[in-house]
Length: 499
Ligand code: NAD
Image (cartoon, rainbow, N blue to C red; front, side, top):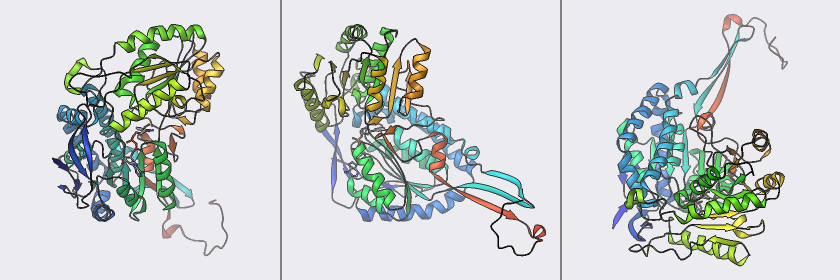
């Protein structure tokens, strides 16, 4: 059995805890490797080494750090196919989708090449008589990232890119479900010239996470995952005096106005609802057509498109639209929620419950499901399903549709499909959700903007990537300076303005 350890001080290191988690091939259901689960002692030792390595890295000029990012981009492109296949084999998503996962992370590294510009401070000449005032952004020291299974390349890169470019050391605790790609990224960073010890990849579960939360050296934590864990990490990390940003779960609504291009809306819903088997935090899981006539037209267009979806293993290449979900437990949870939807009175108009794939009977495949007549009180509406299940809630008016998105506890992403500019503008202005698509179903902002939800989808105040990430991974120091020739007045005991 293949054993996956940690990446510490520039080397692969076996775990010492004796505890392991199974890494599955979700397409076959087989265990393909086991990953070591770190102890607090392992995490603490790796963190102490990272703190040592950070001193020199933090003092390296930003342009040199940016050159490491530049070379890393070249290496990621060189190894794209290999990385994508490794990613698909542990996650289950198709290879083209895995390449998208890597590409969206790579774009954040490209953004980080701008570190010399992004780290520039502010300067006020003559803030007072003979007095200059300036600020600089300094690394926070050792930062840590705790990441989910669903984007094993993109999200670690969103975290480690800005953290490293800002001059920090970084401890990554990736998901134990698909740990191989994060380790490959660490190898590539070494090849790109990153000094050993500056990036440590520690595999593990709650024990490793708790060790991060309690480690006194780690001063900032970026988390992405489900909301209950986000809340836990935010609370404990903040209580320990760290800066913490946590991004949680989602229930993204797409509103379809009567004037929308219905073919465009149906295609968008199929891509955003079922791509990656629905295991995306920006997946659309709720369709809200406005008016019964719109709903009828939409459902009529959705059914044949959904029934045509091809579900299969990543090895089947372009013949597959989406792959298995990540574990048997995830599959069981999705199917349980589907049953609850039926029991609570929703109409299952595409029923994927009987889905079987010959030769892959033990794989974690879930057929596509479409519900109509879903209501606000149902579990399938309230909970994040994180599977290929789209719920349709019929709204009578635009205000009712807007209210649904507003009242839901999650606020990650949302979209509106319409040909009317006024309605789209009103929606973007009023809805209390972090990322909005106008005729765009998955509005994931590009690397130079920032990514983050509202309400129970995010805790903390700065977003991921873009300029916010450079603020999160640095702290500001402001210097007020004058030179002896400017000091002429003798002592002053008053707290006074600089005039
Ligand atoms: P998860 O919360 O189960 O795990 C995320 C991380 O937390 C993993 O590294 C895991 O090892 C760790 N973890 C799990 N249980 C823990 C515990 N009890 N104590 C401490 N640490 C623990 O999430 P997941 O299943 O890997 O990912 C799917 C979730 O992530 C979905 O809810 C999805 O919406 C969300 N997500 C959100 C975003 C976003 O930016 N908002 C992006 C991607 C995924």
